[in-house]
Every structure is written in structure tokens, then in C-alpha cells.
Amino acid sequence: MRIDILTLFPAVAAIPLGESMIGKAQQRGLVTIQAHNLRDWARDKHRTTDDAPYGGSQGMVMKCEPVFAAVEELRAQELERRMANGSDGASADGSPQVTSRVLYMTPGGRRFDQKMAAEHALPGAHLIVLCGHYEGIDQRIIDHLVDDEISIGDYVLTNGALAAAVFVDAVVRLLPGVLGDENSAPDDSFASGLIEGPQYTRPAEFRGWRVPEVLLSGNHGAIARWRREQAMEKTRRVRPDLLAE
Image 1: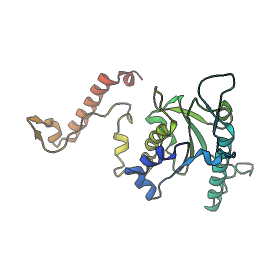
Image 2 (image 1 turned 180 degrees about the vertical axis):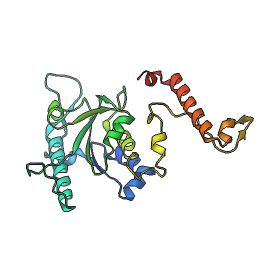
Image 3 (image 1 turned 90 degrees about the horizontal axis):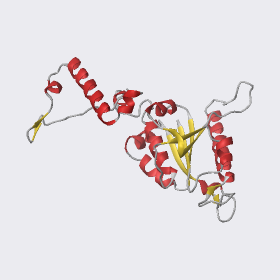
Image 4 (image 1 turned 90 degrees about the vertical axis):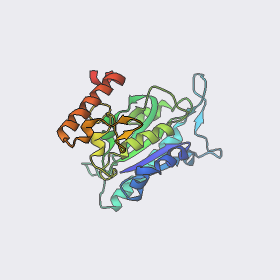
């Protein structure tokens, strides 16, 4: 998988994605992640990426030209890589085609969840993640480039690079081989539609607080049932909307 992030603040996304499991996944060649400065595709001497909105309003709007230029160049690079690796990337009629998906991080997008993360965790896929800033982006970018608008929650951040880092982390950790234990992802919160229940480790007793006896019993069936019950109870208490769904 290859992921290109387009932002005015590449370090905001690149630094956290270079750490922990996602950083190791890149070192092992399981995924390539690159955060690009959108200003690199601005053609004027001031490297302008935004302008005042038509119709009058507060703030600034990100311009079409740099975004279209960046996406078109990244798609061309991906096609070239695939051809170099023996895949011509051609469509049914023989014309060049790259199945890159352009995703726009915005508070006005679809609510991101674990199911959506799994839908994007496809080995060999190419994702271009566009990060909004200021008052958003020119609507023509959304109409003619963007495949999906994604929101990580009902709140506003200073820029979309923060949201992009969250999105990429959630997607990449689902790729085969990224997690040390292949059973970790299916056991995560939300993977089964429930929040994960409590976990314990040594010592069995700390300050008079004991680990539940069932976890020490060695009875795997009883432990599985207890964990399911605890997940149901916690979900009912803190996220009843998940049970309703």
C-alpha cells in the first residue's frame, strides 16, 4: 500500500506516523507513507495555496491549481511505479488508469469508524489523503477529484493533517503483517461492534484489588464468555448507540 498525504503542515502527519507499529511497517516495506507540502505545487513566487472566498466571508479557501497539480502528479508517479513493477495499470479498453482514491479530511465528511478503516486497508492500494485548512477547499476539488469526504468526529481541528494521521494509523494497522499478533485487530474495540472489556496483568493482587478469578481459572470457554459479557456491559454503559446499531 502507498499513502500520499497532501497538507500545508507535513510534519504534523509525518512525525507520529514514523513511530511505533506504523513506523516499523514502513521499515519492513509493508506500506509507504509520504507527507507532502502542498506549497510544492504552487506556481507563483509566493507559493500561494489559498485565496479569499467569492461572495465574501471570513477566512481563506484552498485553491484548485495546487491540489489538481499535486493529485495528477502523484497519480502519474503511481502509474509509473506499477508499470515498472510489471503491472501496466491499464483499464479494460487498454487506456492507462490508476485506481488511486482521493480522500478529503473534513468535519463535514462521513463519520470515520472501524468498518471504514477496514474498507481502505487493501494491500497494493494507493490513497491520496487531502488535508483541509482555513475555511476549507474550493468545491471544484470536491466535485472533480475527491472520492470520499471523511470526518474523524464532530469537532473542528486547526488543520486536517491531525485527522489524516488518525485515519492512516487506523487503516495501516489492519494491513496483514503490521500487528505482531494477527488476532489483535479482530479483538480491538469496535471490531465486533462492541467496546473492548477490561484487561489485567500481573500481579494477581495489587493493594487489595484482585484480578477476577475467572481470568486465573484457565477455563478458556468461561473466559471468553466473561469477556463478551464485560464488553456488552461497558458498551451498554458508555456507548449504547452501538448496541442500537
